[in-house]
Image (cartoon, rainbow, N blue to C red; front, side):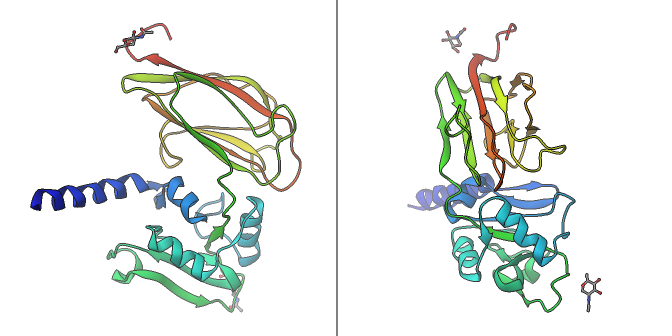
Length: 256
Ligand SMILES: *[C@@H]1O[C@H](CO)[C@@H](O)[C@H](O)[C@H]1NC(C)=O
Ligand SMILES: *[C@@H]1O[C@H](CO)[C@@H](O)[C@H](O)[C@H]1NC(C)=O
């Protein structure tokens, strides 16, 4: 009986490890959790606490979402959404969701740490967005090889899409990703539409590149048996998208 309880606690701890991680010095949730909750945290591409209220709204719009309401943020928190960074949410309120009390974050409290409705909308914070439809494309892939393409390829992909593909092959294998066709709205820093590749099973660790435009990127080889692809399109121009292929190979093989 006691062993069972211990195992249960251990499994909770393990889940927590998988669901959370540090990125840019900020505690982030896994994309699974964000998708389940529909709520996600964003900071400016310039870094932490750089968004005015107007800019914060634009960040959510950009990915086809809206500012999260207090209720949505709390509902997300109740399934484990924990972020140690204050952000704008609906109606100019600022706060952040804390699941686990800590000295360095949330004043040792649990719940939505609420800074209230800000009178000065020029203050700069991060943002909490809500988009329940951001899980329409992508999936979990375990085949030894497979072709992945943007939604509707070779027709133009739609605006406001967020797709995640998680690739997981056998332990001891690696993944080689080869781009077959690539045409994603071009802009200098790939801020509008882009494909991101992570050498990991989430989009927290192992960033391997962000791609847009119509140059065919070079092959990418994983260091382990997992990889994640994230495709994001904004609310304007679209292009025909991309088609790529992954192949699993035994890590011990020298010729790849
Ligand atoms: C509002 O906040 C901004 C940014 O923190 C600051 O520069 C500005 O002085 C504030 N305005 C008022 C009226 O307090
Ligand atoms: C990869 O390794 C497994 C055993 O670890 C073996 O059964 C399989 O044949 C190998 N595949 C190739 C292509 O060498």
